[in-house]
Length: 212
Image 1: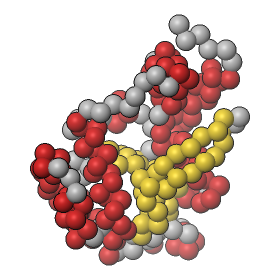
Image 2 (image 1 turned 90 degrees about the horizontal axis):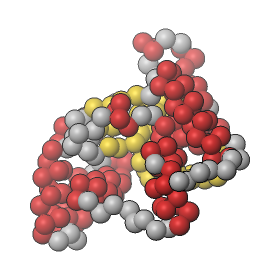
Image 3 (image 1 turned 120 degrees about the vertical axis):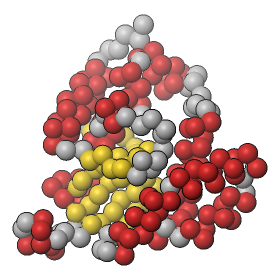
Image 4 (image 1 turned 180 degrees about the vertical axis):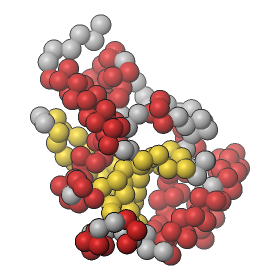
């Protein structure tokens, strides 16, 4: 998010990260999205919906109503995830934090979810059956999520964080639009484009920056 802020507006980056003068947004949709993320985390790797009610009890009445409506809209998402988990998919990490370096820069990230997905014979090489694919998933809870506006810089950074741990060739990164129950996978061309953007940003940050 720091790199994206720098690319969007250098002055905002200056105030937020160098001066500490800007607070995070507290818009209703963003706060709701954060709470949905937390609930998904607390449900665990089995998507145990029985854990949701106690969490809602802790909310005030206004937040609870918004959350219940939102969770109802995620019904198809929950059903599909449970089916996938019964058919070989495994959630191996939730809210996974990682500190790492890209060039001379220190990065930290927190990934919503990491899955292990069994390969099938239809995928091609039988040798792949012994090496499950790793999916790095970032949840998006936005009414009008647009992957073109979002770009894939975030997913590229996530992939870089874990490629030594899992191996570059077996990692697939994707955004998951919770409201539309739809995945947006970072393909090779999107990864190359994101790499060029990241390299350009880090090069600019390596020198003297004119924040005016």
